[in-house]
Length: 315
Image 1 (spheres, rainbow, N blue to C red):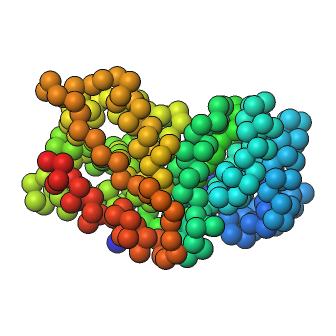
Image 2: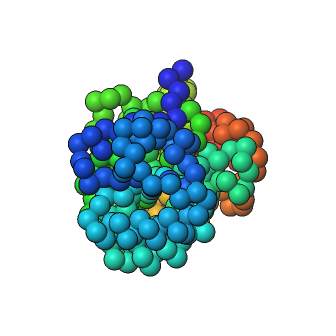
């Protein structure tokens, strides 16, 4: 099994490295700095850290103010609260003026696990994707989360970086490069089916691809780590070359990855051997529940076992 590391640790490590390089970087938290592994940052840069307690709306307004004065503000907050409770502040006072606020949104999707529905940001991708000016990324492991801190700092405008909670398997090594709006082929066994995954579902897609290969079914797996801007070219290439696409995400299929991919396919009208591309979305159509991440992925059919079944059904 791959080494298990939380994406929150990746964020904390990336923030510390970035702060050592750039004096314009500051960090805000809503009683979350320990949760986001920001202790080393707070110890080394106490004058660049601002604690707001559980007052997310106030924190986002303050982040807007500080960003408007030239700072690059990183905000550590839980995704259900920033994408819903503080949505007006994010939309109107950060996204509209296109300010440099970079949001580390923890507990994204089902990774809020035992916290239950109130602490699971299963709707956040659809909500945030609808807002102009926001770059939306979803790192699949701690290495991607760490590297995306530096990438986010270079983006002109707000960035929403959806990260998880508990330790999850490492997918990448330290040499992996990430580019906004460019999906990564993490498996490229053949052209039977393309699986497009995001966040913690990526490791499930990898496991499914490896197991399917042993049975003679050879699939492609894409990590769509950037949901906005979306890698339309990789989606269209997959459609033309494999003719069958499955999306898998640990959040609602309404407005999230599945919706984004289906929009591209519908708009382009791609045909495969003269027929429409076959397409299936895996994700939530209801609220989450309480349980460990592995239990929830199995319960909602978002694990490798059900993905294998879905691939075989599509074939």
